[in-house]
Structure formats: C-alpha cells, structure tokens
Figure 1 (tube, rainbow, N blue to C red):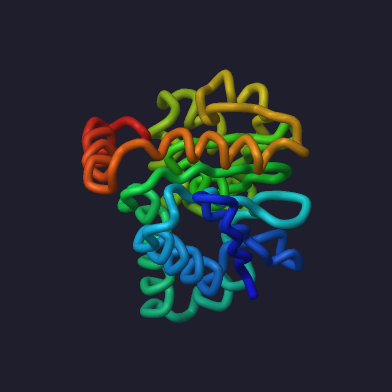
Figure 2 (cartoon, rainbow, N blue to C red):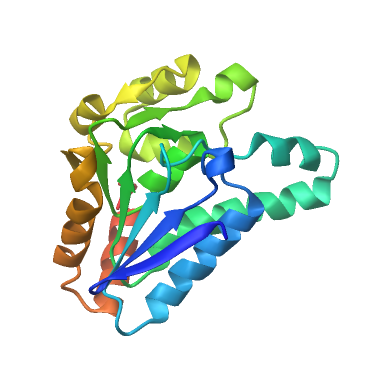
Amino acid sequence: MVLQVEDRGRVRVLRLDRPEKRNALNAGLCAALVEAMQAADAAADVAAVVLAGAGPGFSAGADLGERAVLAADEAARQRRSALSDALLAAPAAMGKPVVAAVHGAVVGAGASLALCCDLVVAAEDARFSYPEARHDIFPSLVAPMLLRHLGPKDCFELLATGRAVEAAEARALRLVNQVVPREALIDAACALAEGAALYGAESMRRIKAMIGASGLTT
C-alpha cells in the first residue's frame, strides 16, 4: 500500500505512504494518487479532498532511484513524464476543492504536488525546497508550478540555490494559505476544504479553469 484513504465526514484524506522512501513520488504512488482523486471526484458523498503525507514529512520529491532506472529507456521515461503531468493536472480537473496539508520536508516534485492543489495548509515545521540544482536535474517539472506562484527573481533564487523556505516565509510568499501547529494540521486542512466546498461540481471546475487561464494559481 502506497496510499492511505480515510473519510473524515465529507472530506476524503489521501495520505502518501512510502515511509521507507520519505514518500518519494514513484510511478506507483503517482498512479494511485491520480486514481484516488478521480474516485473522490466521482463519489457523491465526498465534498472535498485533502492530500497529506504519512511519516516525518510530506514528500521527498521524485524518486531518484526510479529516475536512474528509467534513464536508459526513452519510451519508459516519456510514459513516466506523462504520469507526472497527469498527477499535477488532477486537482485542477476536479469539481471539488483539493487542499494540501504539508509538514516536514516538502521537496521538489512533492512541493509541486502541494502547489498544484487549490489551497495549502502548512504545519509550522514545513520546509519547502527545490534541490534539483544539486543533482544537476533540469527543473522542467517544478519550475512552471513555482513560477505560477512567485515572480521570476524569487523563483530563480529558490531553483538556483536550493535553499529551504520555512513555513513562515512560505506564508509571506503566498505559497501557503495557513500555517498551523503540527498537531492541528489535518483538522485545519479538513475544515478549510469543507468550507471551500460550497459550489457545485461544474461551477467549481469553471472557477478553476478561469483562474488557470489567467496565469495565476488556483
């Protein structure tokens, strides 16, 4: 099992659960997340979704071990890239609000997963970082999502230096909507998710599409 699914009233909580890999995003976890979001979108008794991480952090980003294996197989690499694109597009396609509840390490592709959600609640210990430069990985997956949230100079700084952004700074940069104590994270995210679930599905999709078309983040 790479994903925990729990219903809290009308909110479905999806928890990344690869503790041995710090919730790194491999193909199995990405596919499970896409499938679970689609299932939640189709479920009449689910009003909103919260994405969270089990263990000490939200996500360590892309699974570098998987990346190394795929490097020699161009067709497999392209399929894996398409799956990453599908994952980051999934929250915006849903007719329900999606809230990321992040804590601990929120890294690279894991940070992009959080930022592609409609809202983000961060625990006080959350730390966003983009270490791609240290691995000489071109940030093709993470840069577009980060640029939607930040101006070019802030975006360049985070990508080029890989420095960590603590929760308070993330709030000041508007990367997150709320910062809460770690023990209150899931409750706060569920409350925000349900509070944002007033529109019907079609209106919600239209609002997300309108915001997306503006070039601003949802």
